[in-house]
Image 1: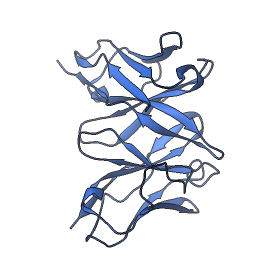
Image 2 (image 1 turned 135 degrees about the horizontal axis):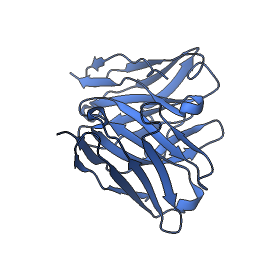
Image 3 (image 1 turned 180 degrees about the vertical axis):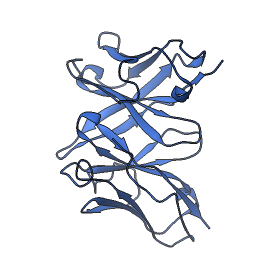
Image 4 (image 1 turned 120 degrees about the vertical axis):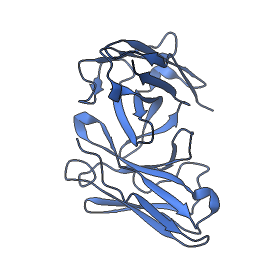
Length: 110
Length: 121
């Protein structure tokens, strides 16, 4: 199972909105299985930001939102803040491989 | 607050073995499936293995199949990963992670802090 494809980096100024894409295949993102999104600061464990494609765990800011179209899922961060600077990973269920993660995107706040 | 604490990482020579453990607390461990996820230095996340709550269903990534064995002890609230025939490419931080499932799918919400495994001579 190949990793889902994400852009290596995305940047934006404070207050702006950015979108991170996550492209898969008919066996993962394009199938019924929803995508989850994780934020990871350096040296820290990943943190769940979006699950089941569009849902936010308790405590996660509503500035984070998820969507999907065809084989591509997206994470949008609105009102970009300095603390949003981190690596972001998408993840999809993938049958017997269970989970496949994206290649990761480094978000830089300019 | 769910707590997952990994242990057992360290330096091991290529071809060697290591056993990772994860101590779970503050939730009903026996009710949840569990995963191991790893991250090589400077690289992305890679799912490694899954075990269902009763140990009846187990999956492995192709990269570790035949070399790693996942197990759990529900009486002791612990998860394990026996790693044999280790290779340099197995060098990574290994995370213990709880499987959560909603109405339309599963995901990992709770992660341990990770334990570093270094395979080198």
